[in-house]
Image 1 (cartoon, rainbow, N blue to C red):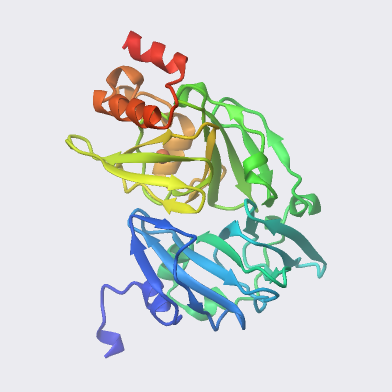
Image 2: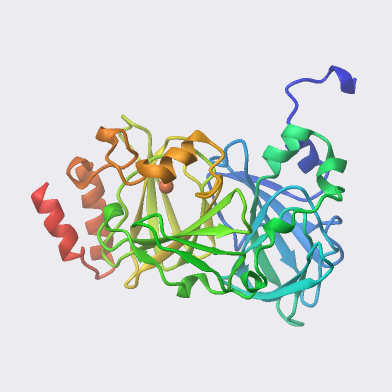
Length: 364
Ligand SMILES: [Fe+2]
């Protein structure tokens, strides 16, 4: 009997009814995820849910495929959605509450956010090639709180303040210059993540740089980080749901819990997606002869952090030593195995450790 059920996950109930594959893993190659036709989205559109073990309670991810020339049916929903274009090219048309429409054109490497409850359609503008988008949303949070699909998917309420100025849909934005690691770019659309200018953030590792994106005035967080050649980010930990999409280069990440003797390792390149689990230490290593970049998408933004974890992380803990109440392992406290592995991996590719990093090793 429906009324006798308990421990209900309304989000997973909804997922089961969508009729598309549900994949679960610690990491995915988003280029090879199997999808199936998704009736909700319309003819020529397929999808699959890609649930990461580290997705937490509030966020999910899915793959959206648009066949050549296909378009989605108009969609509208009371949850936030961020899209990272994995391949192909297309456009999205959004209807503003005042009746005007906004169009932005995307390609592999683009990032966009859909303003809350905006009506939108995605179009594959190519007649020859499919397009694939990796999407992260806060639907699990919203659907589990309201547990009413009609309220979430058929709701007339409008949020004009989420749209921002028109130029935010043209890839323009507003820079908030604050301090290293807190620099922000406020917009709704970034046409080319691999080419976006980042800001130095040395406290996170030799040659590190970063930008935080505030998208569609939302609670979904995005940031982009760069790892220098022959270098890595310092190990750190935080809460779950940071969905990481490498956008440029290749490398690997290590994962472990305090006291572990061994690491879990994920090798990544453009098209991968993975998420560190709750309070799991992790560290990202660049093995490319060029800088490597990744996009991270999470629930709880630097503007609207929602959770205590995000509030403290984005506040002052992210680049503070774990020994001082922060989240980061400083060079002097690194496990020596981490350095040995990195140096030998670089050697195997004919690359060397950044001399500035070598000096840090020698001093600690
Ligand atoms: Fe992290």
